[in-house]
Structure formats: C-alpha cells, structure tokens
Amino acid sequence: MDQVERIAQEVIRRLGGSGQDQVTATATIPVSVSARHIHISRGVLDRLYGEGFELTRRTDLGQPGEFASEQTVTLVGRSMRAIERVRVLGPLRTYTQVEVSATDAVRLGIEPPIRRSGDLVGSETLTLVGPAGTVHLRDVAIRAMRHIHMTERDAEIHRVTDGDLVRVRFPGSASLVLEKILIRVSKSALLEFHIDTDNANAAGVGLPTTVEILHS
Image 1 (tube, rainbow, N blue to C red):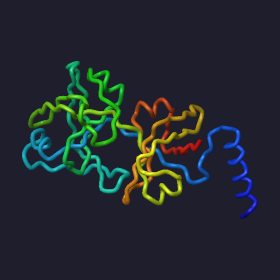
Image 2 (image 1 turned 120 degrees about the vertical axis):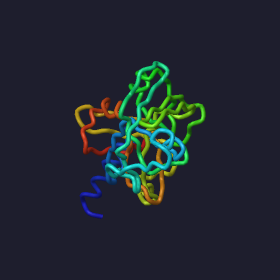
Image 3 (image 1 turned 30 degrees about the vertical axis):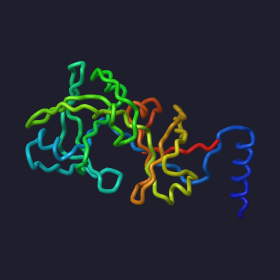
Image 4 (image 1 turned 90 degrees about the vertical axis):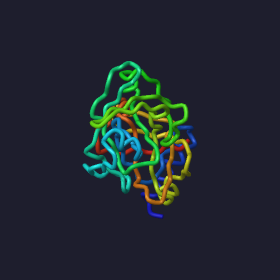
C-alpha cells in the first residue's frame, strides 16, 4: 500500500467515525438527464402512427440497444392542456409508459406516482395523440424513480446490490444530496445515474457531470 492510499483510507476512516457521510473511494458515476418521453408498445404505435409503422432511429442512448426515435406524440391530460413533441424511445416494449416530471404533471393536471419502470398499476391516465389517431390509456403515466444503472461488477465496486436505495451527492456551487436512488443491476448496463429535468435544475446540473454514492 503506497502512502497516498494510506492517507486516503485514514481520511475515510475518520469521516466515518465522526458520523459524517462517507464517500466511496471508487470512480464516480456519470449523470444522464431524462426529459419527458414515452416507451411504446406495438399496438399503441399502430394506433398512433398506422399499422405496421416502424420507429426511425434518431440518436443512440446510453443504455445498450436503446435509442431516441424521430417520432413524437402529444400528451393531453385532465386539464385539457397539451404537451407536444414528446419523444418516443425505442425499441418497442410490451407495455406503454409515459415518463413526465412534476412540472409536466402540473400542466397536464395529473398526479403520477413515483415508480420504477414497468410498475404502472394505479398510475395516471393520459390521452396520446399521433398523426394517425389517438388513444386514451389508463395506468400509463409515472414520474420515474431516480435510479442508477450498473453491472454486477459496478455494484461490487460501489458496495451496493440490485434494489438498494442509496443517497448521492452532486458537486459544485449548488451541491445537493438526493435520497432514495434505486440501484438497477443488469449484465449489459452502462454505468449511469438517471434523473429528470426537475431534479437536474434543482441541483444546477451542467453536463457532463458525475455523482458519488454516499455510505453512512
């Protein structure tokens, strides 16, 4: 063990002993900010864009195989106000899920619960409008739970397991600690912390940036 590592471990030990937050002595985690978007099923895409329509890849996203398409939809909520040009993400899923921020929800007049992806029972109702038709869907809209994608190796490095809830700290002049961050472990994941635009604005996030997991 060299002198620098001994000093680092001693600092971490003292922080832990004083009851302050202890930061992992490993690499930090890149941040990705997610604007409102929709994951879509085959059946809903057919109704909005026409039977057999295929999404057109626009840009690749961080997680392997995922992409933002050229296609967008309009959201209409109980307030009868609309949010236009909401990006459709691919590839197609077996369910349709709309992810909005708290600010978006106020405009739409809805109260979507904070959920992990795919947990839609009891979520909010929206009408989706596309160039070929409309569809009114129950249990479709959520505020996505803040989460970190990582592999099993990343989980070992950061001393967490799938399903854990952790805290992270943003650096900078608007330093902010966020709690209840869900750990999502999968074999093909790219290490990324996903937050929505409201959270990013509150933390004064400027990309690229990274965060640290806090261990008490």
